[in-house]
Amino acid sequence: MAAERLWAPWRLQYIRGEKPGECIFCAKPAIDDDSALIVRRGDRCFVMLNAYPYTSGHAMIAPYAHVADLAALDDATARELIALTQQSIKAIRLAYSPQGFNVGANLGTVAGAGVADHLHFHVVPRWEGDTNFTSVIGEVRVLPESLDDTLRNLKDAFARL
Image (cartoon, rainbow, N blue to C red; front, side, top):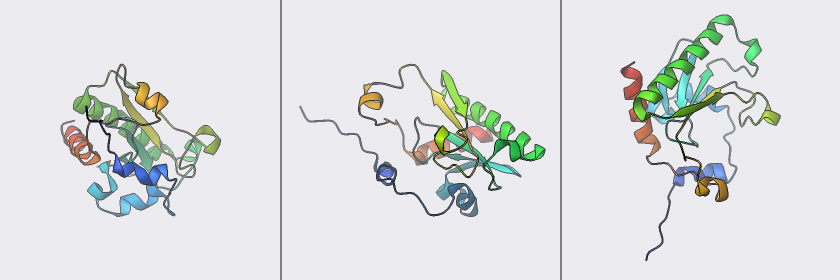
């Protein structure tokens, strides 16, 4: 029997620990939405896919302003951040029918933030059994679709809200 292989070439940069020299949350909104994996833009915040997702549909919501501290956001930006987080949950639910979500922010490097100097929320859809032996033992995530497919699916779901 031939061995099965899981291919995820987009993760190689992450595995090698190669990080861009610029803040992704500042740089991505300046380029086209598809290349930046942006699925929704607001006046003060935006929603983009995580390029190294835990599950299909893993989204991040960030303000355009380069701010690290949630408490430092002005009221209008904080409201839009929460509103886009709510919309992301609705869109992901519409596109993928998850059984639950992990939603939150890691504030500071010691709290697990990969990009500590630019506040962002994660919305991670979850399903029963989605953390299996491959994720736990092999430290590998198995995603059923490409990021391009996820981008199209979530853009379509946001359009239907």
